[in-house]
Amino acid sequence: MRVTLVFTVLNEAESLPALLDSIAAQTRRPDEIVVCDGGSRDDTVALLRNERRFNLRVIEAPGANISRGRNLAIAAASHEVIACTDAGVRLDPRWLESIVAPLADERHHAVAGFFTPDPRTTFEIAMGATVLPELRDIKPEKFLPSSRSVAFRKSAWQAVGGYPEWLDYCEDVIFDIALRERCGAFAFVPEAVAYFRPRSSLGAFFKQYYRYARGDGKANLFFKRHLVRYATYLVALPALLAGLIWGAPAVKLLAALLLLAGVAAYTRTPYRRLRHLGRDLPWPEKLKAIVLVPVIRVVGDVAKMLGYPAGVRWRLQHQLDGRPLR
Image (tube, rainbow, N blue to C red):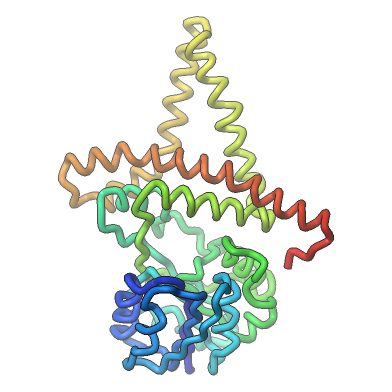
């Protein structure tokens, strides 16, 4: 079974060496690597072209979004089995061996790997605990993998029309849903791990989640989930705060208890993950991480509430103008 590894890059000169080194350390190396560059202005392309450890080809496509870049790389792949990752990660040494193993069985068409946080600061530890799932959080039969850790047959990619080039974010969710509908559930291989560094600032995180939610709006994804968020922040929370401030004593007590229960439910899972991710932090840094968790949750929710209607507006405008979404 011969394998092509694909990924896209854009100004990744700083993070690229770690990914390339982790590919070199694989117990099973790819038979070829195809990388699409979307118009880097740093040394990304030079680093790739100077790489001598692999059979590596570079496609330069200035202006291509990540979907277009992946499609170009996969179309250029010589082999039927495609493994896909992203710049900005490093791969466990057994990642490729593990993620392509189920495809030796002709009954499998797509494989979901996993990814875990690779934090370097207290803020990134708190970020990872807040937004990235642990293995226990995953239901394999429903899991839609990130394209930083996935493998599939090229024929399956062709059958679903590739990645949706009309989407700049959440493109892998649409691709995963199409693959699952066409080929059945992904084989889940949790030991195929990509180590992913969380965002290192609230500003970068806000931009990331705004774009994710805008992508949801464009693709008409997760409407109920977004509706619950609006109801929580715009209806339930103001009602509880009003009861706490202006209500009778019994109403104030009830409002306070409900607020405390809500905060506990809101932070329970991140704090559970933080016990693992932050176990080696000194206590002052642990306290900092504990304080950061609810701040990160709120910032992420605000970003989503602003991004989602922007995506919906884009979708409606395209529909009104008669422009295709796909």
